Amino acid sequence: MSVAMLVFFACGIVAVLGAIGLILAREPVHSALSLVLVMVALAVLYLLLGAAFIAAIQILVYAGAIMVLFIFVIMLLNAGVEVRTNLSRLARWVGVPLAILFLVEMAYAMVREYGTRTALAAGGSVAAPVTASTRALSMEIFTKFVLPFELTSILILIAILGALVLAKKDI
Amino acid sequence: MDFVTQHPVLVVSLIKIVIALFVVMTALAYLTWFERKVVARIQSRWGPYWVGPHGLLQPLADGIKFLFKEDVVPPASDKVTYLLAPFLALSLALTTLALIPIGPATIKFLGQSTQLVISHSSVALILLFAISSIGVYGVALAGWSSNSKYPLLGGLRSSAQMISYEVSLTLSVVGVLLLAGSLDFYDIVGGQSGHWGHFLPKWHVFPQFLGFICYLTAAIAETNRVPFDLPEAETELVAGFHTEYSSFKFAMFFMAEYANMITVSCLATLLFLGGWLSPFPSALTPDSPWRWQLYLPAAGLIIGGIALIIGGLRSVQWNAKAVFPILGIICIGVGYLCTWSAVMPVIQGPFWFLGKVFLLLFFYVWARGTLPRFRYDQLMAFGWKFLLPLSLINLVATGLVVVLRLHS
Image 1 (spheres, helix red, strand yellow):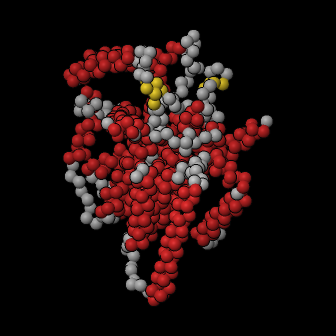
Image 2: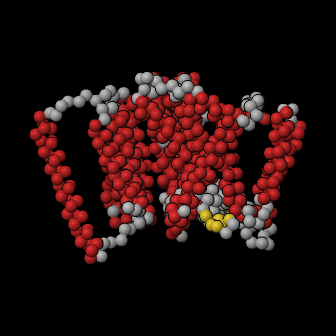
Image 3: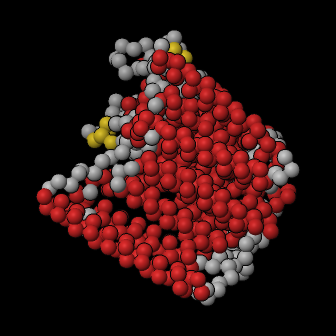
């Protein structure tokens, strides 16, 4: 097994464990920290795929800014330990079947993808992995996808204004 | 032996990590000594004096003391997070140093060529910001997990402060990125070589002076130091986020703070002060009139060595009388070594780089010795209403100039 595979499996396991911890932890700060773990593991996976810029941005924005704000708010509100209910009726009759359906669908998609990949690899027509340079990425964003990009910034601006209005009701 | 030949990159990196860790740890220890000495001089005191000649063994004594103190874990604390916080703070602060190159892209020494950096990345700058942005967790979690009033307040303050000033810090650097057009430290420093009118080096500090000022201010706030050390304002918060920490866990927070100081100084040197480039015109051609600058590291060491010998012999402390002349002779020896043709070109880059970093560190200590602390609301108002608009103006102006230059 190559080093890349080892790193991949290690990060995959860490990400899954972090996701499970996010749901099972009863202390809100522990949940938030588990989510940070998932994000860092994902960033390492991006790094393995050759997307160093995306990996760095993933950590900078999600782990370094958004989750810090989450933890900040949890600390500020001093939220206590979560109260756990047993499975409610809605969760038991709708949630559990939907979750099982989702898992089955994912498993099916993965098995099918694996089959086509091995067939392609046998035919020798799998595309070589690309190394996404920052320059190429920004060229795509600012030429081909410039409209969605600008729309996203307007959306964020609206969100900021909304937060301001909610925070200061007497303006 | 098989493993070594199969993974040359891994082995070379490991050797570099061991050397860098040793050097950085020593530097951290002596940075505390340096800070205490300089602040003492500013306040007309002597500072540490009795542990070793001129207090030179004080860091060692402090380290041993920290190791042997009782390690108190508050019973009401959240154990795992409480243990995780100092570890996060220190390990992340040290990790960022792996990305910082201290010399030119390739150096040749005894027939081997290598890079003076542990890990080279084409997006090193963003990666560095990413790693240091997770450093907030160390402080925030320390404040929360202690389960006590003052640490919680300190942790809240510092998270708010670090998030606020991180925005200005990142924006003040974007101006340099626009000029350099790259996230790679080698490209950024390479773009600063050359001179305007034969005497002014093309460092980014001159066109980006506003950005440099914004960066320095935000960097002091980012590292939680005076005048922005609100998270640990002892007059109101006892010791802020690390009130409940004792023994070596406290020392880890302390070391993390100094490691962060070194990181931001290194970054300022790379981005604004021309990294490892000499301020004088190039001396690489054999008949250049600037060739004397190649002897500067050696001259500095030899003069320092002579000063040590004279100072040691005139000292009233018996241990200084014994130790300083020996240190002086070692200094002169190393200085002589630096004139060898094999060593001289290698030593130039690190000499200028470390010299600039040292000046910035001195500036930090100087600021600590002279400035009073901000009030909390002043701090927030300054960050959001003054520093952020200033760095935005700098960014827009730089962008305008770059675009106009492209089109003319």
